[in-house]
Amino acid sequence: MAEEKMGFFKRLVAGLNKTRDNIVSGMDSIFHGFSKIDEDFYEELEEVLIMGDLGVKATYAILDDLRKKVKEQHIKEPIECRQLLIDSIKEQMDVGETAYEFENQTSVVLVIGVNGVGKTTTIGKLAGKMRGQGKKVVLAAADTFRAAAGDQLKEWAHRSDADLIGGQEGADPAAIVYDAVAAAKARKADILLVDTAGRLHNKKNLMEELKKINRVLEREYPEAYRETLVVLDATTGQNALSQAKEFSDVADITGIILTKMDGTAKGGIAVAIQAELGIPVKYIGVGETIDDLQKFDSDEFVQALFTTEEKKEEGEE
Ligand SMILES: Nc1nc2c(ncn2[C@@H]2O[C@H](COP(=O)(O)OP(=O)(O)OP(=O)(O)O)[C@@H](O)[C@H]2O)c(=O)[nH]1
Image (tube, rainbow, N blue to C red; front, side):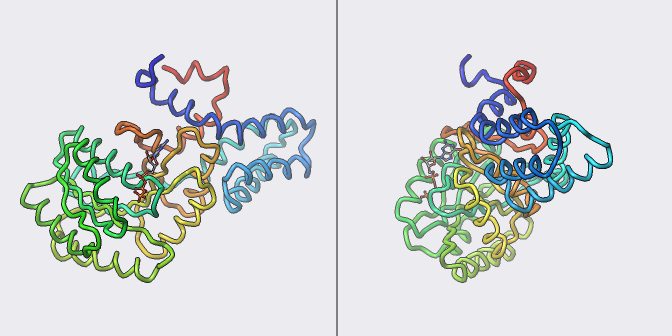
């Protein structure tokens, strides 16, 4: 079947193959390998969850919850823990309903992320998505630190049919944002997407830069709905989690975009991010083309993760 014909769920199931091998296969062999629920059973589960990048905090919370339910419901068979564990992961990931309000009104979306995580590609995909909904999109190339960043964004602006402002290497990012706001207003844009730098090794400068940009936006564009998204590379696992933590120290993050979820074994990081930080993963990147950005739904994610070979057929509809 052609890739583009695959249903959303089936694509998600397929994209999570390596993560599934990493987490669910290990769990299933524990469920089948143990004849009773004892300390060794919990210890082995703990190892699988930690190795699966769910993070220490979420792992402990999930196992505490499992122990509680096993006791309360007088569970005796290890295999009965499978569904309890699925429910528990979903509960830990619960961050309430994820809002996408910026899609429905005049808005400014600041996009932050360190080099190489897929920030530029993601902004291009987002621009394409918004253009696809008939929206007028302006891109602000305010990541002026890296020489090629502006050129790369220009290419994506062309591909997604969005207007581009800025991109001059070494220019003041806040000045670019100022110009971009003027352009967005003049052209009656629905969405202004701002590509900002994310140099975590210099947190103080980053904080100052974001403050300056925020001041410009508050002053010049108070009517616009605000969103601040951090782009993280799922293949970096725990590193992505620590980047998310560091960024949340310097900015009011409203959502995460996890890139490269296609084919990574470290997709469990989505659990760690939502469970530990309470910040919603709003989109996942599932490939390199303009259409490879999907809205993220944690229940669906956990369901897809635990969909085994024989159950995949059901998910294809
Ligand atoms: N497989 C896959 N590749 C992706 C995804 N998102 C981005 N990439 C690739 O990751 C690489 C880095 O993406 P960029 O957009 O250049 O990354 P960046 O964060 O903008 O990095 P700089 O431009 O260096 O700041 C590119 O080769 C992209 O095609 C994704 O969801 N899946």
